[in-house]
Image 1: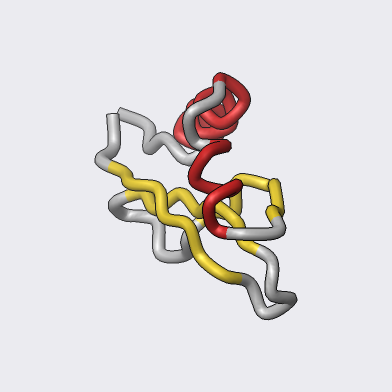
Image 2: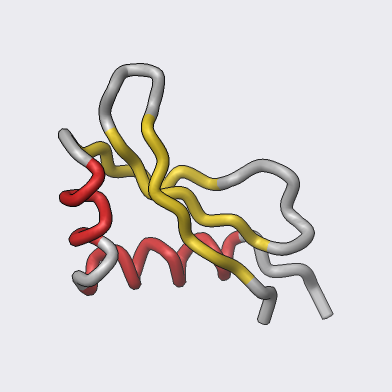
Length: 65
């Protein structure tokens, strides 16, 4: 499986979002949720919903072997 990491970044709107960065994929992938502050975004990474979102995006962008 591809190497990846997740970052929390501020959006131009002032809200915060989590982005998945996969080795070999040029653009970071927004995991689809926006939060009022950085702390809430980081806390979301500890719930199963975020794990599911990450797994779905990894499968979607998986390179054929």
